[in-house]
Length: 325
Image (cartoon, rainbow, N blue to C red):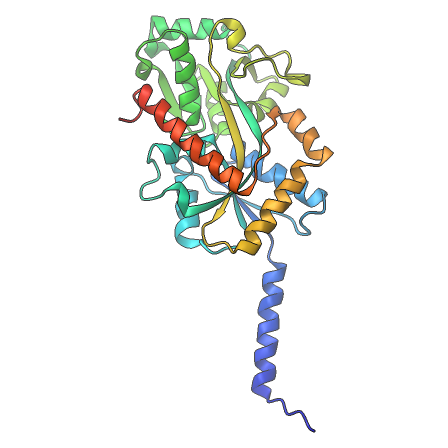
């Protein structure tokens, strides 16, 4: 029996194989919803590199910085234009949950995307320029208490975002009754906020220890408080906590990823597995230790529930301090 194959059929097969090959060769992509130098940028770049080093992805992770709206521009891009992209993950954190909790991404909600996994928790810090006369958190808060207009604090999230909330929580714990008088200036990422601190445009910085570390190492800033229940280990052991200075303020910023809402179950499970496998490696534990990340090991449904709880908790805090009604 002769097998007859038309030229059209061969062309169709060739086109199909070509499309499959192009898809297979597509590099995985991570969107960092801020400018280079901040915590989301760190999350994408460090996890992408670590995944490749561990052999969990065989192509270089492409990192795209998409700043704006405290992460809202990236969220809208994923929901509206990249909803079924199986090769895309997006860096997220407590800042993302904060903006969602406060309805700051117009028309968008947390259930429009799929929450993948956490890669650790990043404690908040309050810092000043290395040459500042301020050496303790109470000194800075006393200045704010005496004259709120004399001190501006910069952060890498929008007004009402997680960086803003952290300094308000500290101010509230110190007895500053109307925390809405605390001057906060928002920038698109921690790197930009620190640049303004070094330029003398602001007097303080609120962010996370991972984004502050490089500036501490370079001698540009000094951390006057870590918002952790007790001192961190290793090279971070020299940084005092707010609590030991009499300011009972704790702020842990979880770090993780979400994926497009239309990502296939197969791709979603694969990404969850990759991030879970990375978290379990000794290499990732070393990255966590070197960058001040505390353990937070949640994947798939457990992470989804965790984010839901975070959004609910932040809504409650925001109402308490007057950010939302």
